[in-house]
Each structure stands twice: as C-alpha cells, then as structure tokens.
Amino acid sequence: MQPIARASQNRLKQAVHRQGSGIGGGILERLFTTVFKGLVYPQIWEDPKIDLDALELREGASLITIASGGCNVLSYLTAKPQRIIAVDLNRAHVALTRLKLTAARHAPTYDVFYRFFGEARGKANIVAYNRFFRPHLDDETRRYWERRDVFGRRRVTLFARNLYRHGLLGRFIGLSHMVARLYGIDPSDLVRARDIDEQRAFFAASLLPLFDKRLVRWATSKKISLYGLGIPPVQYEALASAGGGDMALVLRERLERLACGFSLADNYFAWQAFARGYAGEGQGPLPPYLERGHFAAISGRTDRVRVVNRSFTEQLAVEPASSLDAFILLDAQDWMSDAQLNALWAEITRTARPGARVIFRTAAVESPLPGRVAPELLDRWSYLVERSAELAARDRSSIYGGFHLLVRSE
Image 1 (cartoon, rainbow, N blue to C red):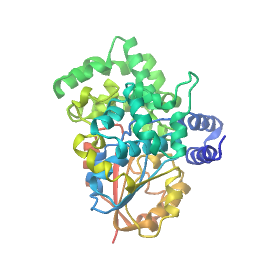
Image 2 (cartoon, rainbow, N blue to C red):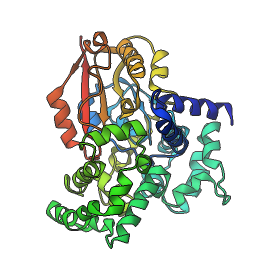
Image 3 (tube, rainbow, N blue to C red):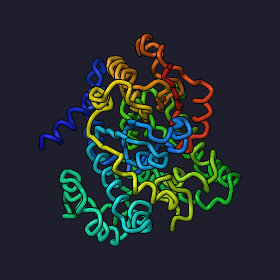
C-alpha cells in the first residue's frame, strides 16, 4: 500500500473504530472501513441551499467543510467566500472534489461541464476528460481516475457509464430498486407524478406496502444492510433510536418525506433516489453548482478551494486562532467518541471568529453535544433551537433526523 493510501486508511480507522464496541461490533466497524474507503457518495446528500441559509456567509468569509462528493464545496462558491478548506478521510471523495474543481475551471463551456457531472454518461465525457481536464490534474488525482479495474477500464469511465449508478450509495439505490421490482413496483414511476398529490398517492399505493414485506424488514434490521448509505454501526444505532428501535419505521418515514415532502420540480434528491439521476436534458432541479447561471462565477473562484485528505480536527489544528467564519460538519459527529468530540470542539472554538457559525446534521433528532462535550466549550456557543428546527423541515434530502446551528458568542 502506498504511504498516502496507508495514512488515509489509518485516519478512517481512527474515525470509525470505537473502543468498547465488543467483538461483533469491532468486526462490523472493520468491515465498514473496508467498504467506505472507495467511492461512497457520487452526490452529497446534504442540501446546500439550507446550508447557505443557515450560514449567512458574508462576502470574503473563510470556511471549512467535509468534502464528501464535492457538490456542496462548489455550491458554497456562489456565496463569494475568500477561501474554503475541504477535508475528507476518503481519498475517492478527495479525488472527486478535485476533479469537479478542475472541470469547473477548465471546461470550455457550461454544456461540457454539465454533460460531465449532470448527465455523467456518454463517451463524449471521456473525450472532455482527456482534452480539457487531465492536463490540469495533480498527479495523485490523475492516478486515482486512471487506475484500471479488472476489465481494464480506467476509473474515469464511470462518467461514461452513469456515475450516479456507481459508488456505494449508487449501488445501494440500485439494489433497493431491484428489491422493489421483485414485488412488482418500479420506484422510477414516482417521477411521472404531476404534483405532490400524485406523489403522495404513488407512495401510499406502491412504496408504503414494501415496508411490511418480510425481506425488507429483515434487511433493515441488520446493521450491515445500511452500509450502502454510508451508515457505520454507531450511526445505525442512533438512527434506530429515532424509531424506538424499529429501523423499518424510521426508513419508511424518511422515504415518505423524500417522496412526498417537496415537489419534484424542486427536489433533485428525489430524482436521484427514484430516477437514479437528474431530470433529462437539465429540465429539472439541480444542485447549485450545476445550474447554468452559476457556472461562470464558480469557474472563476475554484482557486479559493483547498482540498486535503485529513480529518476535520487535524486540519483545524494547523489553522490560526480566530481565522474561520463557518464550519460544516455534515453528520460526522454521529461517528465520534466523547474524546473525539471534545478534541474537535476545542479546535473549533479556538479557530472560530466571533459570530462564526457551525452547522451539522444527525441521524437522530437531538444534538449529540450536550452531556458529551465539556460545558466550558459549549458555553461559548449559542444553539439556535427554533432556527435549527425550521431549517431541518426545509432540508430536501429528507434523510436526517436533525439539523443543528450554533453561533459563536461575541
């Protein structure tokens, strides 16, 4: 194993493996580490519009975020920040984010960029990669995308074969569709609904009954079955707790919200879940970074982003005191031990400017911080309860139990 890959793997182990999890739990955690080291999220599953509303970024702000699939990193550029630090323990996510930034910078037209990441299929994308993007990639990122699989195909050919049907999440969604079809249901029929009433009717008649099927209830009761959603064992427990231990109930409620909570005309997360891609020819909702009107601005700001293969806490430790305005943690704290949470919040508090904002999501409804993070750290932050609940209700991805917003006291 190369030194960079070995270091990345060690960081992921430190993040996921929990002391005291027992023999069975330890095996599950190691298995999760193995599957998580590859591409997990072709598209990130946090709503960037909600993030930007919560952060209220001023022009010239400095922020740090977990990169994941990179969609949000590029979308934050629409707010004109001075710099973005994007960190991730997963080398595949680092490579995908760097490729998106390079493509935004060097694609000759919006149409080339959209075809590559919006449609993410077709041989023309490989031509674009070779001609426009490859010459500008760093060596590590180029090696990642040009590594060959057992069939001799370069990894970048995923963009000729529908990227969104690959990666851990893409395969999980595909498997879910296959199970539904075994019972005579095609989930993609949902996107033919003409309004929310028809969306609700389809869910009630076709998708809801699936959760009473023995196979579905058995599968959702197993921690390993949700690895495809990027959910490690400890987060599975938090998610199940939201439904009194009944994981099928939790998933049913969140799928219902994804299917029926928002109009299909405004929810690209629903398109990804039910159609396994965005609406054809750009005739539907898109992440901000893929919208035509944002392309020129994003293209001109890509040099403001730095992408690193480190943990959030590691990166904060090398940042100056009082230097950051915003911290985007996604759902990473669901994975953390008390010691990791306190180390993280010590660095967040040290590097935060007065008025800085922290946002994160959780599988369960409640924040994991009270009672676990030292009061002398939390007392320096104000938790905006009502605003957090309002933003959670508007989050179109619909898969999280809670959205949380904290503001640094002056």
